[in-house]
Image (cartoon, rainbow, N blue to C red; front, side):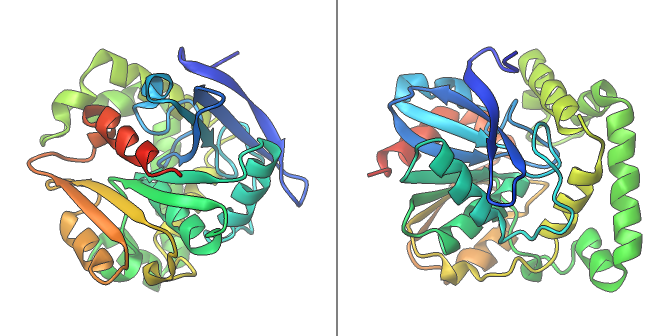
Length: 287
């Protein structure tokens, strides 16, 4: 059963160590391939917030689930940079030898890792409201806790996600009560339904995948942004409460061939509000 009304197909592919990765596809099967990475917690059910526009833009969007989410098998010993190997295997199985990658929020580090590790295959890197590397977020309370007490940080992450998984609808409704530029978007019934669907699927097999994912994106990634060898386009809201713009500017200031587009007075939900223009720009760069 397809999880999203506009998804063309979904399923699993195998990677080199025998694990399965879940995926869903939107858009034109013969279109420019764009491999997309969801936020945390997330799943193939909703990655970008704008997948439904893929067909009209001539794109083939492939949403891959990281280990432990949705249909993807767990990989408790995985690393963030090791995701590039999973992507190489999955895209080979899905007959996409060259592609763009795009990551949203906590999916951004994984897109950037592919830009650093898979330059032969990856044509362009896109980031939507992405997290900056932890070394420029040292004042983030969770980054600070994780740096000095991993056990306590893991316990806090587990408590957080177990509470979310115990009442997914309430966790989604709570998003619409937080003041700020995203409130109106997160209050939309269609957005609420999509977040509820993707969170239920994210926690299909428990919270272990979400816990490890949070730890990985908040510790050293295993590469530097200057290692990215392909053109990068980063879209960000000036008032993003999850990933402050100041940290993004600090992280990308010396990255070659990185273009930062800032949406003034907007927050973290820019995939919903600017999806068409983002996908059009990303698609036009896939050559």
